[in-house]
Image 1 (spheres, one colour):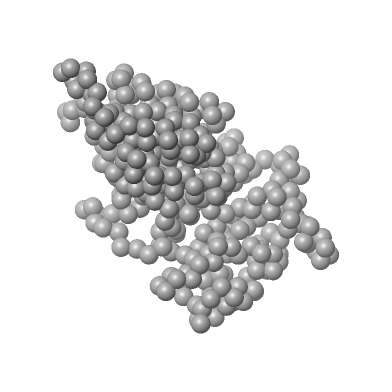
Image 2: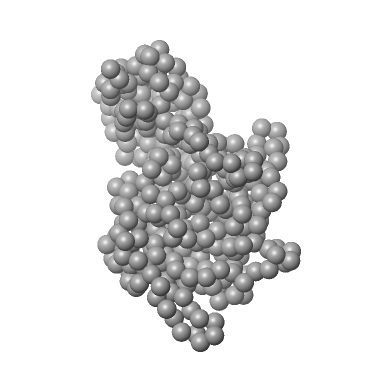
Length: 375
């Protein structure tokens, strides 16, 4: 019978590349979950080992296959400074060589830092990239609209911005931004599409005719890792991730892969939407991700004729959610759509023009995010 103990036993021969010790003996196999149809687990690596995660992945899969255990859904992340200190204590007590801490290595520059980020180091805590995940508890609250317009607003303020459409089942970013071309491959790297000053990658670029994605968890995790490792991002200040709604595998992958990521929670003012969104916020808190704040979307409908506001989905949900998460309500956007026309050269269905009222509100939101991130 496959259970946590049998998985740990099967992985005993797999070594941590930098520390040269068994992953299991160091306690670096985490979050083992065995379900009827799937297995998932997290692998914690020394920061210097992240670029070897593909090799570790193959070793883990092979070790489990040797134990007649099916291929799992794997997540990788770098250990924190505290975890590294605890590991060094363990190695010291057993007489083994310790690994240098990041503090001891700060004098040595990260490969690619300052001269174009190397794709293997973009997830490194010292890469200089600010990761911001945009999450919601349920679909239909305008999370992707907020993500796209925040990314564009950051670019309009002079920031170098990337955007990953992490909603692999429900990808929508290319259509929302009016992107019709496909990424090109240069050497062994994929060049993201740049639109409105934002570098974009999405599952939508690799699907023909809007076909549905019928994948299990392991494939989703691999695709998300590919978005980090195989895309030529270049130098970035911010990388935004449009998460799928809820707290499923992809959201957990992001929390595991990018422990330094910050998060914005999107909701509508409806009490139920805010109640469900609280779960996404609780997940961020549980995984020690900083919540930058709450954005309330579809807060009201404003009549163009009279200017009167109608609160179609009620009032107060965003404020209550922010209070429950001990954070701030960053913005309240009305129900509506950009006044764009298909004949315009830079047409997009969902990006507000900079000089529009909502476009300026997104500029204000972007500046608030910059102030909070200190970048």
